[in-house]
Image (cartoon, rainbow, N blue to C red):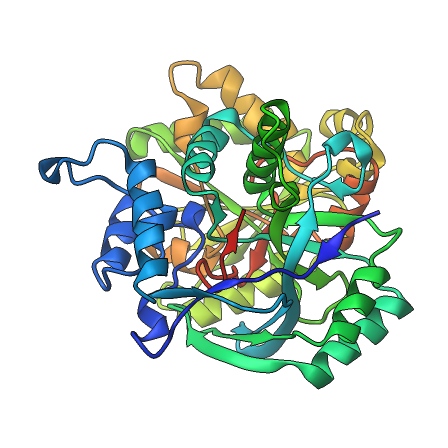
Length: 437
């Protein structure tokens, strides 16, 4: 089913500049100030291409065409260089979560683009047209993918054997440390036998998108547009993809927590009081103490002990600024909220993120009619750090992580989770290898 193939990747030439200054996080996890700070470190940082901006004073009026010209200039001047041979690029990340070391093993290859309805490439989240419009303009102008989507696949014996061949025959390209202290190491594999074995191992297998639904949607629309124009080539039917097996011990999914921000402290207090009253027959509420001077590591330990590792019915952790405690809201069995969730497909009904959307977010939409809930709710994967920085007009709602198996089950059922249901950690870096179409 899934088509996995090698390609002639375009890579930074590390003899010209420190690779740490050239790569960047995924474009969709950085703010505008963060983007500007990153590009200020090097005139050749990948964000000049992935998140291009125009200098209007210098006569630039089209940021996408500017990225195209810059990309071609870097190729011409040896900042970037395309490999002479087709390759797959093993990509390992060494990192820690709550002080525990992990290594995630994956590889970058090209994935054949397939329409969603074929059920070969399976999503688990919704996409939004506004996001894909920008990415489509960039792809149409540059004909290049500067970052990869992140996909997972179910393991089988043929894939295991193919990966063993990769491990034996790969060569190191470079290593880079990200801002979180995670070590990313890229390798190159050009051995024909290993490449053929890997491609053949995926025959009959679907793949599941972990991160990059908007990138994939963009690539699909670009390919379809090129087909309609009669300009499609073999290359336009592929997207650069980072693939990891679903049972890799280093495949970590963190929860994405919700921050509710209202106008002032009085409004957030009134909101919480009214919400507690209305959900009293839906959630059983208890609380745990959060010591005032606890470190972030200690807070993370408490959250892990009392919330993240808890089993059973949907469970939310509610924290107000300076409250000194976390309220645990566990859904009551046979309550109105539980009955409402039971009307949903079973693969969704037990997820905390679905309980939040169906009960809490729905309540917000009904009772905060003068506030745009899309603007009032933001997201974070760092619960402990957010507790320390929580403002008086904010409320933090902590969720348990959605498991990899939950992701697979939802995708297999042809369903999608709410926005920001998963946070695969660490994120892969942009600019490690570029795919030219």
